[in-house]
Image 1 (cartoon, one colour):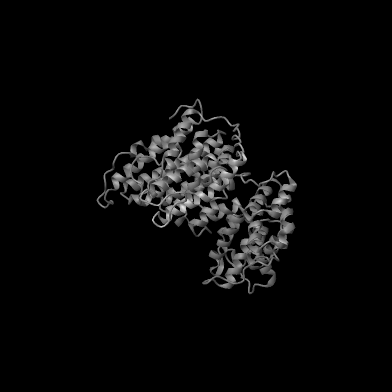
Image 2: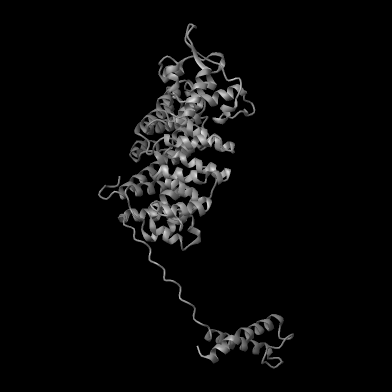
Length: 544
């Protein structure tokens, strides 16, 4: 740029500001510079502004070029089969309706099928089509339950896109390695720098990722800064030790029992009690065994309970909460905590070598059975003990399906989670055959998908019974929705006989027959669609 041009360009801003000020004030109050007053002044102002605009543009200095955008990384996974790519586009284009109440009509809910489609595509190792990435990220943004599977399927190109659009920044936080400051877990210096200087969320992500790779290194990192961390941060970091909890963690957790924060102490005690060979577990076993014994002098051996009379400082240090909740007696509150934290291996030796089934079948004196069995339930869940879970669940056909120790549906669901998938499905199927579907919804939620054939048949048969009885159909909408997602697609052929509108009994809910027909039509359509989806993801497999 010449010196003259530079001088003119430097003077342009002042001239432009004067024109703008005159336009704001009005030409009747101020005359623009270089323009004679008169009736033509407004037109002259506009002409002057136009000329100034041309001069400003002509004198504009070129800006520095931005750094060229780096290409998106390659995704080495194989591409989707064409039919599966078209199916993905259809699933992403569907949006859930805004109407309230139970869903009507026979059309499947495509958005509810998207999670299963993503799971199947990830299991087969496919890469996402580039043109589907924006819609996939939008879907994951709107539904947090989709994010893990959606981001895994979207792959590295989704992270590349997320750095260009603020609406998709969640992907950088949710995906492993998505954050710009996340170090390579093989880089000790980078790990230490992020641990010492990173934001809280970055540090939680780091310690969780490192824990899965090198548990000892994660624990050592935590020990370095433990004394200077805030109480709420210590609690979150301590929770990361649940993954890969091992006897090597005991020394650190024992020190955490003396923490300033009660929540930290309680969490440390809970983790230690999940280590059956820990010193805390042994202390709790001794305390619990002193409170519970078998009285063999009676006609029938009977469990007798002598609950603690006080909660001393040593008990509190080991995680026993001294103050009972409102409505609970202190002694029963303390007893429950001791039994819950004691290793379940304590009791066979204490009760003459009896098995868990034999132990829970023993009568309990003085009304302590509910408290004792509930504590054993919590211990079985915490220690993920299948034998004790099986014993406490009892037979699914038992009266009220309460089992010897399971006193609520929530407890039964937690106990079922300790069993393998096949046994879990068989127990829930037996429960449904005896007690129907009215209480089964929470239990169905812990069963593996797709449901095993015995469980699927039990659900369909129970729905058919409810339909023929003219039951109020909307009360089964939750189970019907689960069936759409969890029944094996091969069950569709068994449902064809249920598609007709049934005869309604006199005491049936108005419109129940047409509702049941629509619901079964939607179920069959959804199952066949799920079968077609799986076939499209498996080249060479014909659609059902």
